[in-house]
Amino acid sequence: MLNLIDVPDPRGVPEAVAFRLAEAIKSMCKRDVGGMVEQNLKECHTYARALDIASRPITLPHELTQSDRRELDDAVFELLGVSDSKERSRLIDRLYIETTRHFATSV
Image (cartoon, rainbow, N blue to C red):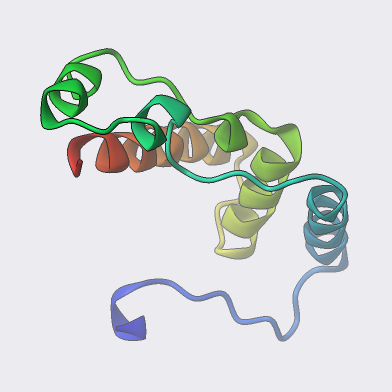
């Protein structure tokens, strides 16, 4: 399965990226890390309600609105070789939307 995804090589990580990764993780360790599923989906107990929620505009789960989560993901994209900060931001936005969409439509 690892052949299908990019896995960063931790050897030779630029010092600035390693620092950003460590700081983001330290920050996240100071709080409760939430799930990747919207709260209303977790509380959903009927198929009809699930369909109703899935038909609404996407709302990011609380975890995906946290600045330290975004900083961690930004550093990971940089580690993967995405050097342009605007491109990393665009990729993170898309990742968060698609992650949310995945859970919303797989109910």
